Length: 366
Image (cartoon, rainbow, N blue to C red; front, top):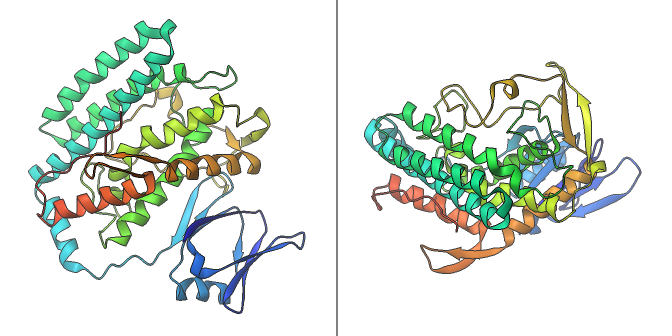
C-alpha cells in the first residue's frame, strides 16, 4: 500500500474495469491499482469521473485535493466515526479545563523541545553565529519552563508563539545558499522561496496526521491546544506541532542546502482574494497564538512566491523519503519510520483519552 501523488493542471481520473486510469491532456495515461493504493493526493485541477469516484469509495481510498500552490481544498475520507463512546471521552476532556490544559502543555512542551534540538544543531554547524543562536536557545529554554507551568490556555499559546518567534529568528542560519530567502515566517501568501516550501510541507504533514487521527475513530475537531471552532480540525493542528521541526523544517533546509531546489523551481505570482489560487491559511486561527509572524508579515500581500510543478515534485519526493526514513522511537526502543511514529503518537493520544495512560508525551527528537 502506498501514497500516490498526481500533479496535473487538466488531467482526469476515470475507471477501467477495476482500475483507475489517470489521463493527461497530451494523451498519455497511467493505470492505478486500487489494492496497491492507500491514499491519493491530487495537486492541481484534476477531474474525477463518477465511476472513478465510486471505485475510490468501494476500496475506501482516501483522497486529498490540493491546489497547484499547495492550498488544501478538501478530501474524500473514510474515517471510522462510529465510535461515539470514544468521542464522548474526548468531549469530556474538552469540558475539563484542567485536563485539557495538561495535554496542551505537553504538546507545546514537545514542540518547543524539538525547536531547541533543531537550534542546537544549527549552533553546531554555524560557529560564526554561536552568540546569536546561543542567545535564542537560552531564551527558548526559559520560555519552555514557563510553558510547562502555564495555568491558563491563553498564556500557554502566548509562550508557544514566543518560542516560535525566537526559533525562526535563527532558522536562517541553517540555510547555506544565499538565494534561500528567509527573514521570518510569512504566509497568506508566502513572501519568499523558503516560506513557500515550509507552507507546502506543513500542508502535507497536516493531511498525514489527519489520516492517522481518523483511522482511530477520533474526532479531529476536538483538540486541546488550538481553539475549537466550527469545522476546524483542532486536534490535527495539535498533534502535528511536535513534527514540524523534525520533519518539515529539516526537509526544507535539506532541499536548499543540497541544491535539490533551484531558482527556476519558484515563481512570483499575483494574487487576489477572489482567486481560487489564493493560499489558504491553515496554520493560524482565531484564538490561537500569534506564532512567529512579525506584524508586517502578517497582512495579505498582492504578490507571493510559489513552487512550480517541478518544484512541487521535488518537495513531495523529499517529504516522502523523510516519512519513510527510520529513526529510533523511544517508547518502543525500536527504529521505525516517521509515518509509523505519527501513527504511534495518535494511538498514544487515544490511550490517554480512554484513560489507559495518564499523561500525553509528545514525540521528541535529538
